[in-house]
Structures are given as C-alpha cells and as structure tokens.
Length: 157
Image (cartoon, rainbow, N blue to C red; front, top):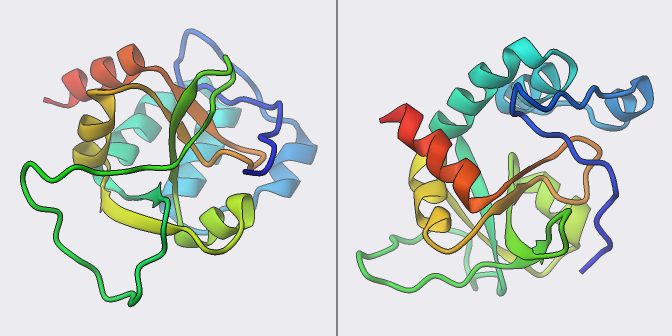
C-alpha cells in the first residue's frame, strides 16, 4: 500500500477543515460527487448536502484481486466480501472506498479489483464492521468512523 497523506477532510459541520488553495489545485473533481466533496471541504454549510450525495452516488470499494474480466458480477445475499483496508487517520484499518475508478489506481496502483455499489448500500455493509476512508491517498478525502456511518445512514432513513 502507498502511504496515506496526512491531510484529512471531515464532512461533519461541527469540525470544519478548510481546504487550502494548494489542496484544491491538487484535487481536480472528475464527477458531481467529487465537486460536492470539494464544496463541502471549502464550505461547512455544504457538508450535509455532500453526505446526502454520497449515499446516492456510485462508490468504488477496493477488493484484493482484479477480476479476470471487467463485466461486473452480482453480489449474492449472504456472500462474504473481502475489501482492502488502509490505515485511517487514527491508524486503525478501515475500508478503502473511492469516488471514481481512476482514483483507485492513482492512490493504490494497478492490480486491485473493485466493487461498484450505490453509496447507501455499500456504506451499510461496511458500517457493520468498521469505518471507511473515502479517497485515501488523495488531497481531498474523508474518514468516517463506524459511529459516523451509522449516524449518516440513520439520517437517510
């Protein structure tokens, strides 16, 4: 795994973490979710909208092995899922999740697989076992602990 950068962006309104011009220049949004992430990082009032967008967007969870063919597959009920973990800001391992497919290889290199799912469904699965790091290794990213995920998912219900 590549070393995770020390910068951490939290979307919780109670803990503003403004993004500097250097960070903004290093992270160019590639989709609407990434633009919402940048907006939330620069304006605390936009963080609830970002959290709502995460739940509705397609997210990419990293799996240890790339599939032989990239034509998708169905995750069956009760099927176990193996995800790649990265160290969170507190050093504890958390699932690596990304806002776009390109962000995976940029942060972690080639040779890994991924699972693409709608945010609320993916985060619900991950929240059963721990936290998540969204876009680890990138200048603009978010770490949610298990309790943060539970609260975010509860608000969406």
